[in-house]
Image (cartoon, rainbow, N blue to C red; front, side, top):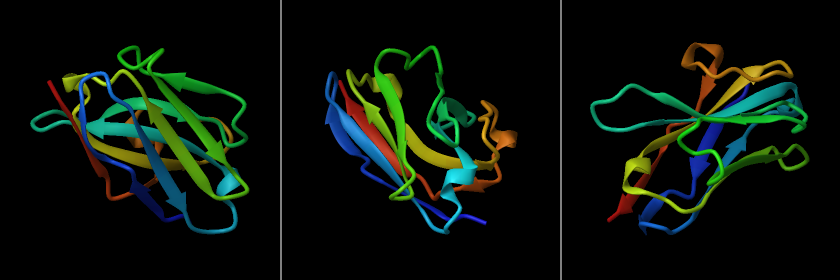
Length: 124
């Protein structure tokens, strides 16, 4: 089992950057693929990015490709989401999620463990 805690959200202007962090508990973090999702008010939770357990491969939603970068540091039990060129449409609560196994998924149902979320607000 793994517990996840996100941090790094906040208020930023259009075009700005933020780096979200996800701290994981447990000694088997390297056994979990990690994903980032977001949920805007009145909308369903949607996939943003995911990375394999060893960090070799990643996938991004089309809406963030080229602007966001997912990474992880298995020695520190940490996952990150670097967000650049932020837009008002990126405003949402961002969640990190963990899935046991090497390969990631892009659906909410693929992940068993979730953090509490961190708010990202992009002003125009």
